[in-house]
View 1: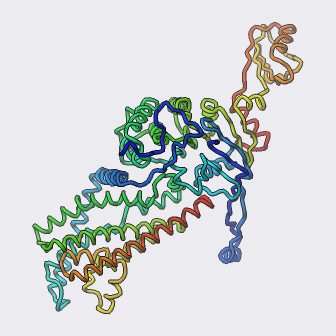
View 2 (view 1 turned 90 degrees about the horizontal axis):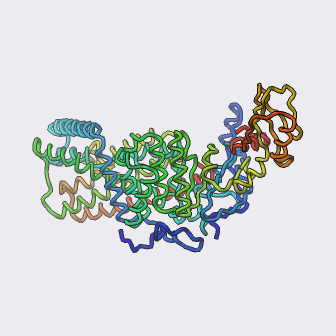
Length: 293
Length: 329
């Protein structure tokens, strides 16, 4: 922290407030340092419960293993004449299962805080709720990538085999795409969470969100196996950006031009959904501040 | 500039009233029956920097609604709130930078982390310079005695420990004004005393304005130099503690121990409230008769062994004020 910043506090512990003294003129902002600390805290917190971590890891492993078994069997029966190789399919189902954070922790938490009225406290925090939650989720996502995605991917790589990109351009595009995918997924979860201001039970809308995302993003079934007529429409929706686009980049299955187009579309969706979230929050604040929630 | 300036402040809630029966239900769907419920009805006060104000009133009196408007959580229906030159509900984040708040049982701390980790987060959120933060942490640790549990996860803390940590959180960024809503609820006597002492110290040392709502009159007596009472959306008393005592606390109790029992105990200007054995208690109004004259009369008439004058407790007085207004607090 830069000590010379005009932070709104008293210069010395012994100096009392004087009415003329504009001590708190500059309000705090969300800085990178704050963001980094929030990320670190969320990361630390995600490592607190060891049993929870191990159970999650085991269930992910089990699902990845089952998906690989099911899809290789289906695929060996030639349901598709032209298409990906078996190793590409294995890579796809492995990544699809683990890479996208479909359900984020703060959604259920939000409902509880709206019902208890605790959410009102967010209005007197000096940083916006959305940034606070985003930083927390980034921390959790990093922990997920390091402690879940990486071990599982390595395990599959050494026991079954995975196709790994060799072109640095595709690796870079994959990383960009994963970041955009995370932002879209966060925004979708944020909107779902804010629904708590208008409905009392988030459970069903959260399930609806999860299933829609899993189906249309290609997590449940790779989009290759969707009807050819539906594909152009599905690819235009924000969901394809969550899993299908990044994984295709990982597999080096699309041209650079198509990749740039897909990333631009991802970015556009990211911005749109983030803005919807902001709009909903301002509506929620208005409702909260007029009728007390 | 006053720290807080409240002018003709109103808050009216709109509440959907449900009609009876099936047809009523249908009617509700099409056109809800909305009734207006005023919670705060045109209150005025101003608070100087450095004042310690007890803001009290029975449940549903508009107490929390006022605090929420002061912090910027609620938008006033009519009238104006100015806190250090800004309207809190319009400039929430500018206002948030120089206020601190403790809302009863709601936590600001991170459930699974040790409190010192949460404190570090506050340093960054409020952008407190490192040296200043260190000084404040030292102060909080000393005044609130946080050392023994600063590395324990919050979920394992006792209520008293957690409340102390919560209160520390509200003061790290040297706020000019701190709102405390029921800060001692559910705590044991020792924890209550620690918190009251801390509030007194910090107010004396930093001239922090403290607005305290509580049902525990000991909190008010020990921390506040001014009392604002609200009932049914109106302010019914606003003044110093001494003024409150002078206005409502004019009744005095005198306990007398006699040499022998007197069944028809009587003294002019006072009312006998108890007469058991050799113990007699009488009540008098100090506006009507002075204590020395009363005792003079007594010793003339009876042989008094001992007597003791009791000042009324604020708690009893406030209860008296509520009861006279038909409220059961």
